[in-house]
Length: 299
Ligand code: CP
Ligand code: NVA
Image (cartoon, rainbow, N blue to C red; front, side, top):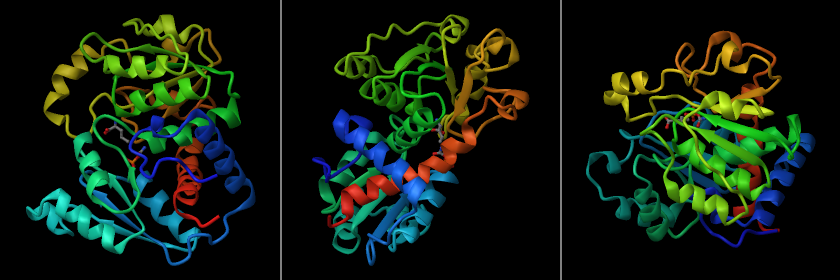
């Protein structure tokens, strides 16, 4: 089923039915292996920020699908030396079949999509990380099932914002606990409400964890926020996912990685049987392969 959208800038660029089909396809590709459906297709990958999972999963995924991915880091292309983004977009669109971009400003992803004459995939912006959400929904389906209740604990950041909307689209119950001043954009809850979710964010982690099948957290200091470190560490006191917070529950734990052990999560929790994090990381590739096939394959 080809997608209605040509770009994937956030999770609700697809419909709930398309999202369900993407997760189905991801599960099938994971179980059955991939055909080289994207032979001779090229993915340009723009990175303004570092990455392990996003870079390697897209590059390996394209290779397994018979295509090719090209790493375009800040020092590799003229974008990092003053060429305007819209010019970069127009030129890349003449060469590659799709662009995946990891950027600071979400508005830049929109500029790319507007000017590149090919699909543009968001590989993380300051606002959103929809490829992570695809992998997370596959992980939840595999581990606890889609009637799970998930508690987001920690920063109201890019990963959390896309996850809350995607979970609502998938019919997963989500609760949110974020420190005062570090909540999600209120528009995120309106977007989730459009899919039937009624989320009242709280500042009390214990409250949301009590009923959760899964507790999901992410770093407190996202890429680009290094100058806010001391202020944020103080504000996030009490939000660490640790044995005390999880006591009395048998909740699984998710984290998009990279984790900062001793900050948002303890080493013992991350290394415990509760952690789904390695499956999440693996599922990035299967989920993105499904997305690439839906966006690019001639079916
Ligand atoms: N989760 C994630 O996007 O990881 P990377 O920053 O390593 O790509
Ligand atoms: N919130 C984190 C996610 C990293 C994958 C960041 O933006 O740095």
